[in-house]
Image (cartoon, rainbow, N blue to C red; front, side, top):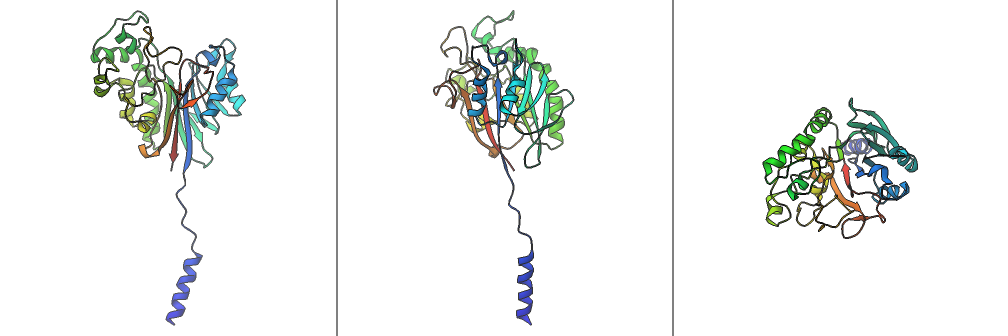
Length: 304
């Protein structure tokens, strides 16, 4: 009788469905400023396609999408056979996965992955002037004063971009509060508070420590900088995206990291990050000739 009971239990266990393994999706998210539609430096748009393909990106937030021929992001999506969404203001999001909706003011789109999961992807191009690194370096750039202190830098950063950040966060926070997995790409035209630190200032890489408000506010909202999650030391890995068109020693310029890929995922979800640009000396993924005045950034995530 006991043997029969054990046999019944064994048969019952064999008939139970197997425990499903935790599903995950690998996703590469990229940001790229095209510089007047991707052709200003004399390269065909196919060179921008090569940059996106070399990064093996799945979703790309684009800035400065227009030139005299129209909106390059439409043509890029067509060349890649991807989906496309024009946000206005010369910004667009292109994706190998279907774009099935967008936020009311078009800061973000809803993307449906192959797994069936929907994510929200935001993209921004914040105002370029006044530009605080130039104000510190006494490089004339618009009719704005030169500065010497962190307080002045934060003031002018808020004057330049604060209203845009507030508008974007108004929509991003809705998605975050609903529990959606969110990504944010963009040319912020402002360095990161994680790069302008006391350690970097002590290494004479920057004039003073500055808690730049744009990245500070977005991080406080719950977003993580993918590149800085992968490379925590800004002295060892500066990740400069501005600019490949001049040398770092050029007296009329100041190089910095102003292009970002951020997400609501934890640090452990960041599997890889890279600067995409013109040479091995300045980028992790190289495409030459490089078609724009910004380097791109791509981050690979594992979404569980």
